Length: 133
Image (cartoon, rainbow, N blue to C red):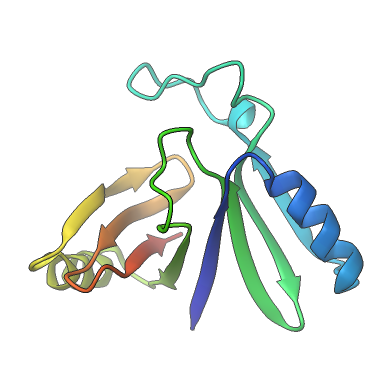
């Protein structure tokens, strides 16, 4: 299953509340940047602390993922596709193939929220987020 991931420019909380009302959503989860473990390589500014690092909700039976983009995010890359994998090995295989002629946006490696996670912009400009939970 492929899931859409939408980046909002500081309005993810507002958008989620709106979609929750429009689509009568019952399932919604949100993780704020302030909820993430401290990382000296990824400092969180005061401006970002209350914004959404990762959220998910079910709309019309489909899971929609979302977050607030970092202030330096590139416009136009606001939607990506998420692929979920059963094993880190399969994720790494697909990651490597998508990377051919593409660009690594986040290296595939273990994260605090997943066994393995990577983000690639393929040679056609499509953003793929790969996750093994």
